[in-house]
Image (cartoon, rainbow, N blue to C red; front, side, top):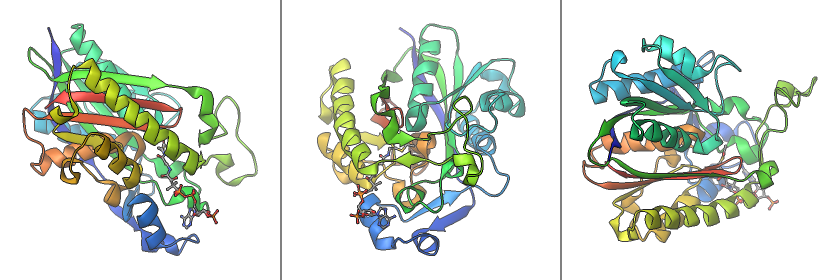
Length: 323
Ligand code: ACO
C-alpha cells in the first residue's frame, strides 16, 4: 500500500504583533478577559499590502527547503484558505507560478478553520491512488481582513499567518487516516452574511464584510464535535488514546484545546499550543503549530500525531499521522 509521508514543514508569521494591551486601546476589553477566556496574549497581523499568497509563498518555500525538494519535484498544490488574494484566479494558481512549479494541478479549498485538514486529506488521496508523488499542502490566512475592529467579541480572537507541508509517496506510513465532515445546519453561528453572489451592503463599513460569531454556542458545539472526531479517528485505526504522542489542535481557544487534550488523557506538555502567541489563524493554525513543534525538536520521527480542527460551516476534520 502507498501512503503519503510528511517530509518537510514550514511556516510564516507577519512581522507586526498586536498585543492585548494594543487592543485595550481600540475596544472595551482587557488583557485579563482575553487571556482568561481564550488564552491569547498576542497575534500577528499582515502589513499593508501583504496578502495570504505572500505568507503562503514564504511558508511553502520553507517547507520545500526542509524537505530538500526543488520546485520541479512538486506535482500538486492545495491551499486551504478563506481569505484568498482574489476571487479568482485561485491563490494556489498564483503560487504555482510564483514558486516556479511545473503546470501542476493547483486549487484552493475553503473550509474555514478546517481548510488545512481538508487540503491534506485531498492531497493524501491523490498520492494514495498514484496520481501525485509529491504535494505541497498549505494553510494560509489573512483572516484579520474579515475582522470588524470595533467588535470586541471577535476582533480579539484572530491573527494572520501561514503553514505548509510537503508530503511524498512512501511504502511506510505516513498519514494513517484523514477524516473530514461538514454540516451547514448552523451556518449562521459563524461566518459572514455577505458575499459575491448574495451581495454586499453598500454604505456599510467594508461593504458589510465582517466575521459574525455566536461565540458561546460555537464553543459548545466545538467541544462536543472535537471529542467525537477524536473517537472516530482512533477507532478507524484500531488505536487507543494512549497510542497518541502529540495533539496538534486548531488554535481557537485554550479552553477548547485543553478539553480535547483531557479527552485524550494527554498531559499538557503533549499538546502543542500556539494560540497564546498566534491567536486563531483559521486554516493556518494547525500547520503553523506543527512546524513550530517540529522545528523546536519537540516532535520526533516515528511519533504519532493527532491533528484536528473545527470551524465555520460547520466543518471539522482530523488526521492521524506517523511522523
Ligand atoms: N472583552 C471583554 N468582554 C467581552 C469581550 C471582550 N473582548 N467579548 C465579549 N465580552 C463580554 C460579553 O459581552 C459578555 O458580557 P455579558 O455577560 O455582560 O453579556 C461576556 O463577555 C461573556 O461573553 P461570552 O460570549 O459568553 O464569553 P465566552 O466565555 O463564551 O467567550 C469566546 C467568548 C472567547 C468567543 C468563546 O465563546 C469562544 O472561544 N468560542 C469559540 C470560538 C471558536 O472556536 N470558533 C471556531 C473557529 S473560528 C473560524 O472558523 C473562523
